[in-house]
Length: 130
Image 1 (cartoon, rainbow, N blue to C red):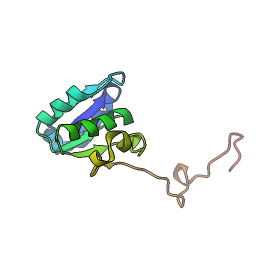
Image 2 (cartoon, helix red, strand yellow):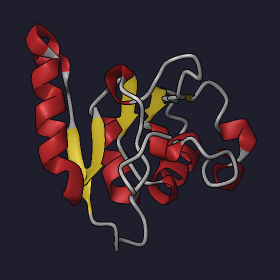
Image 3 (cartoon, rainbow, N blue to C red):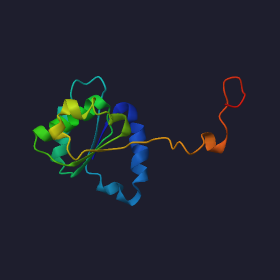
Image 4 (cartoon, rainbow, N blue to C red):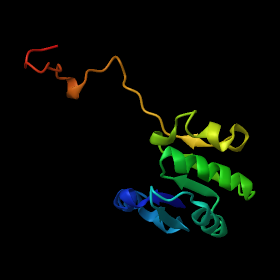
């Protein structure tokens, strides 16, 4: 089950390809416009699909709404958010901390021990190292 703004619909199709033989386990998929005031109707549709995992490929505004709406409906799927929606002040706080318990999100960090650019030394704007 996925919720995706229309701007990332093509990215979601590529992600679905990555599911391989498991793509048939997707039970619902919907989109929203970033200008939409809420995603309430999409969340009702998703809950009615019977899914137990909800991947909200959404901006922080919609991720917070999704968490809050799922709780308000008594729907308790495993909610997975993309790294763009992992800001504590932008998602769990507006959604209600109690509603965000168990939500999972992605995070990426640069390993300070690894060099950038595949081992090459980064160059400044002048072209000289460093």
